[in-house]
Image 1: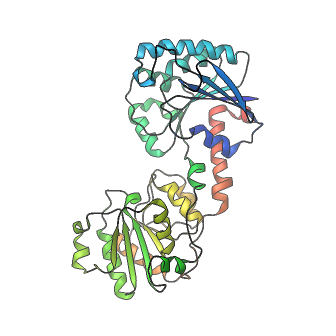
Image 2: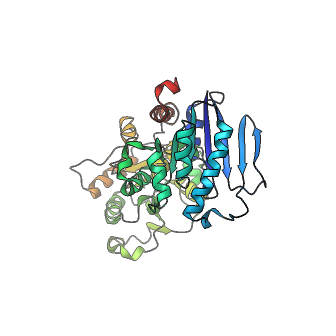
Length: 383
């Protein structure tokens, strides 16, 4: 039986990185789960509770320590030794132990229990700044595997610790993103009417926020201007772009009545606006917004893409499924976008776009996560 112990402290925010693996690839009963909260003020002394088959352990700080942020490196090392003594007593005699730390604060503790308990050590990293202090270096050095929540986090980590490349695995937090509820009416025309638009209008939406601040929208505006010459009832909504005067094409093409710049929408309102669109334009598909796109694809939103991320291995799967068509090398961005805009008109105006195949969000992702486990634990433990 595998014993999975997750270590939290006051600096750990949000769900555990390891939870994505546990909830997506293994059934309860295949492992024993422990959650340890260091520095918890819920109890004044060491306390254990079992809730729904999971063991919760609360370890308060001694009275000499108020906050984790105020502990000096020598104090933290000394306290880590005391914690190690405590955990060694608690888990002595157990085999197949995996200790997962949500951050790199506890490097000395991890080093000690790896040796004394023969434990596998994993560490989560979500892209917060790495300072290179000795505690973090100790964690990076002793960890069997470092679980990054994105390719961006992976890049940041390897800039600071290039020698850790063999230990790094990327786990997209798919469970959190994909299960998020979107407000999408079934009928696109009904949604258009709710926004004060006409059913016959051809609506495109572009979200500057998730496309990247550095993206140059000149090609988008030029392509839309050319498209509008053929389809006068076309309209373009651009979200999260306050500086409309920075685009000469917008002024030169006299698009004041056809392009609307919107700021300050809530996430729910953005989802509702997406529901009106004949297509959502995504000229820069990046690793940062990739899972956001998966969420919307599941709801049947049509997308126009012209560019693939160069470091996202899952993008090829979408291309193979013909959900995504990347930019061809011999096409200009403006020409390609115009071609894509026209393609939208060949589709049923009220039908959803090509939805993400169910296998991609279940079996495929599960396969990826199990592969991560095999890398961390070894096939013999999984079997």
